Length: 325
Ligand code: FES
Image (cartoon, rainbow, N blue to C red; front, side, top):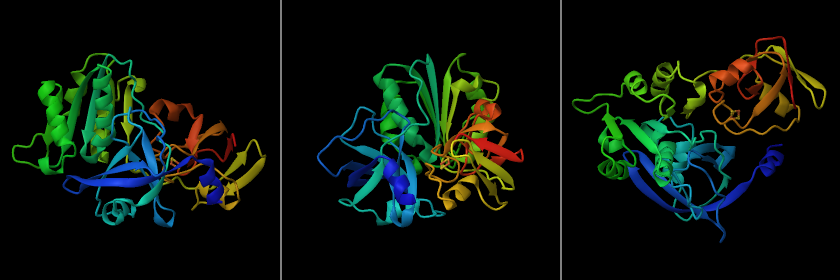
């Protein structure tokens, strides 16, 4: 089953060209095509899924400028709580090793028409943000960066960012929250001080994103963009019925299963990746019923519309859902 699904995605063979110590517990990995071909193009904010051993796969933002197609660069923070992904990348991967990755996709797309773009990054959340900043510079748009890391030593791309700061005084704001005289980012103030119509992008740990969501709650949702690393919510319980409109099949979702788990066990092939509501791959149109949204992908507006759902983690508030599958 997984094989059929894998072949429906575009996989690329790459070789690890180099691994660089970027900051404390953070490494960058340069991936080049294993064959003599260009890699698919991508846009700032895009990510690729890296296929690892035992069916494990993890999504990483591309940090290099989007005009580069001879290589992809990803940065990975070694997480002591790793469920395998960062351990594989940081402890076992070696230069020269070949890997399979997916063609990049982008759920955190930059609106290049915005008059002002505010970039907010916490820790390793700098990865898509740094790619965006490089793009905004390339197309000469107005931007500001607010970057927080625990300490100077743990701040990835700090040298490059300080170099940008020296060329654009007043646009880069860096806060180290575990250093003497630390002053964190006050997101309420940062958001309040920006001109109307500015677009906001944030990526970082859950606490920062929660503060960001609160600070931007009154803004037009179309101007607020968030990228998450991991799901903050438990999957919704089952206990409802799902009908697939195209195949006219109906399934009962048991209390301890997700819709996706049931569909897969019944031989229904559905695109999927993270299995925890953060990548958007399993997004499915809803024709009837009200989903119990548990993902971190849909915007507030999209959730309220109840037209789409992530079936790997979301459930149902009604006794029955009809999906366009
Ligand atoms: Fe990633 Fe569902 S598989 S959101």
